[in-house]
Image 1 (tube, one colour):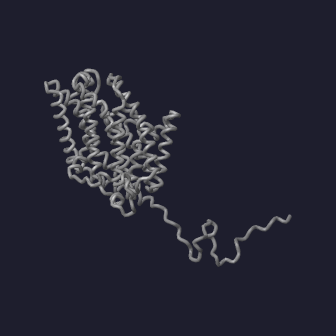
Image 2: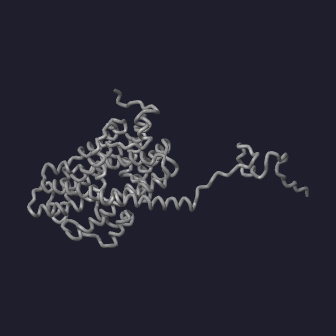
Image 3: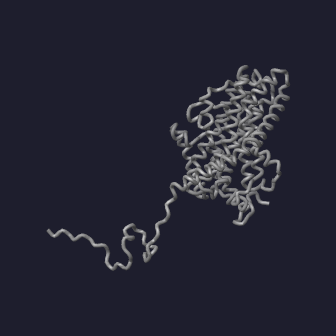
Length: 417
């Protein structure tokens, strides 16, 4: 068995991607990444080091001891999320017009997000144990998902990743508009990587808005790995992945230093974070090479449906619930188990009662809006060629006469004076 199997045009892996087949293993990786982040927020971070900010009223290392060491590194689940996002966006947008791409992103992101913003606001308003509610106008701004760009705080801090995702979609929509192809994806990955390097060197805030130099490498790696999955591996694609891994490691090192400093644990080594980021890359390389294509467990699809609501709901509401349980004498691990299970149930309810009913209705509304836009400004049709003009005639003036004209257009007589 070869490590890098050669993919023929009729291979099952490529046929699966071309048809837009679902990779169940990605659902499993998504729920794994979400649970990593949950563990980090509950056991490795806790909300802060002070009594008012922390879900435990004290630093997490005083509550969980050695387990808090592992939890301090599991923020890297976000890194896995971003690589998966690049892979999935490339897969789902292949062969689709830009209107369908925009519609799919809106109906995927907003229903659960609106619910999470309103529910989190209600919880912290009634029980401001760990976080305080934002003013109403800031909550309204959060409903747009553009609050970070407007300079407004997030209702829940985890929403920062959504602002990052939106900017990625904005950039990638240009590729979708032109048509997703192998060459355009490679060009996009190359240009975005160079833009991130230039942004780091120039410190231009305008360029950084689009370049996203800190995290763009994860999306680029995901895009390149989908090309590996669809077309087979080659040196160029793995070169893109390798460069992205190096940039991602640099980001991981710096972010882990910031996390450790914020936790007041500057003695924490950085190598575990690098190891986890590297494992994310290795796992996704395996997915790209088809190693997980035979995994079709039904529960993975169910778990994947819980991932997005779980990510949106778990942090601030989870800290509030942990604080309430812990203050009433519940043991820390028991509280973590209860709250994690409660967040999974809440995620299922959000998927069942919010996403499933609202998504079809929002899809219908978006489809009508896009169809109306297309009908109002139809795409220009190619000009019809008058009879008798050969196809090779392409100059604008040539359409003013036919080949039956034996004389060229009259030129003005030279001035003889």
